[in-house]
Amino acid sequence: MSNRNQPPLFGVAEGGPSPQAVTDAFDQARLTQARQLAGMTKKDLAERIGVTPAAVGQYETGMTRPRPELVPRLADALGVPPAFFLLGRPHGKLDGSMAHFRSLRSTRAHQRAKAAAFVEQVWELAHALEKQVRLPDVALPGFSGGEVHSGVELPRDPVQAARALRRLWRLGTGPLSHVVRHMEAQGIVVVLPPPDEDATTVDAFSTSQLPRPIVVLTANRFDDIHRYRFTAAHELGHLVLHGDAASGDTQQEREADVFAAEFLTPRDSILPELPGRLDLRRLVELKRTWGVSVDSLLYRCREVGLISDSAASRAYQRLKTLRDQPGFAAEPISGYPGEQPVLLRQAFDLAVGETGLTMERLATQLAWPVSRVRELLDLPDPRPALRLVPDASAAGGPTRPRRAP
Image (tube, rainbow, N blue to C red; front, side):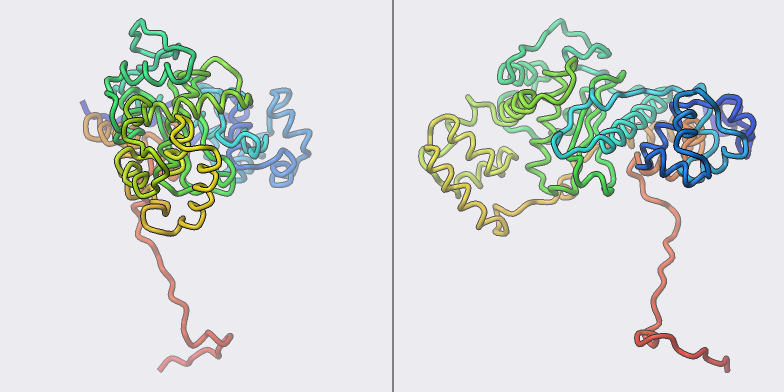
């Protein structure tokens, strides 16, 4: 049955709640989330709305509530509708220490906080869509929220865990096409957010501390499909091996790398194909077959003893001079649609067709701007773009107004 004519959700009248209503039911956790997403400090926000940083701190701890006249200022400063601050909506709260960051050492505390707030919203979107359509069941051993319980407990050893997961997901022992699509098919939410100033440092991260595991991948630091696939497998390794552990351990990062290598290139399968001596041309061929970088294959060759450490070192130096050559140059992720996340967007499209869900209704349910929903669903803005062409005559500076004929 269609929901096209249903009234707005949460009892919010058209035009939104009054400032007094928001003050009366103010959710301090939403203020923290919005501020972190905006990349603001308490001092930054205080200056924008005309209060002290201490006052913002009190709002976020729940000691006091913002006065009604401050609600519109908060909403405007943080780019959210006033209804965003209301109590009552599902909120998947995540501590940044429980997310595994690919570049932990170079990821600052405020960037981790912003990333955690982003993942919270990703889960909220997935949760809202799951009320409309059934998402794939989570089939991840060891994940407490998984709907599929196979009775299989994966080994803690990263190599054995990778092999066991391949068997469980029936992936065989050969090359994997579409790593991201396999993860989504097993109920893992994968997102590729639009680049921003923090994403240049926050490489990738994942968490299994919410009711559905989430992996965030980024493309702007290294827009290379092979590194991207390895990173996806690396984050999958964290979900499998370290779901119940706090992040920050360099040993965890090494284990996730070992898992990724075995998951993408099982040793018993890749070993017979590796050259018995250094042969970069052969490694380029294997790169295209297995979907991993030449660097990763070189590491495999050294790991299994086919080449010496000194030969590997020389090969890596040689690779640096070949980075812009065919076969060695980075290949953009955009050229591989099967590796781009689609789970949330396809869930929305299905809900539109089956239940009459609209973008505006979904935004109302989430209390987000419509533009934010589009952004997380990776949907283009349907509005026509206005393009202004500078007057060539103005290139040398201001000109005198022309009199109309």
